[in-house]
Length: 80
Image 1 (cartoon, rainbow, N blue to C red):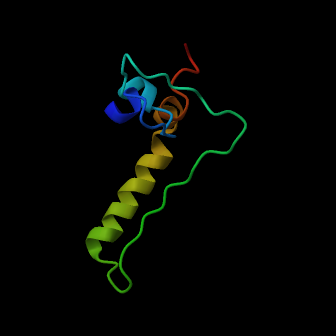
Image 2 (image 1 turned 30 degrees about the vertical axis):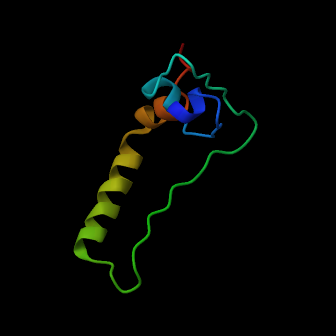
């Protein structure tokens, strides 16, 4: 963020960054009219361990349960 604030770069970031990473020298500009990104989880071939299985189960459970929280993260200023 400091490199961007210094004017040496720009970046595309997650929607929640404006709320959770505020910076007085930065301006977050929503990108409208495009689909959101997808998150993928990966692991090494042949290493789908019980820990990987549990992580996938918990991640899926939280994703499906926390619909309102996901909406607030994905669209942080929609309710303001």
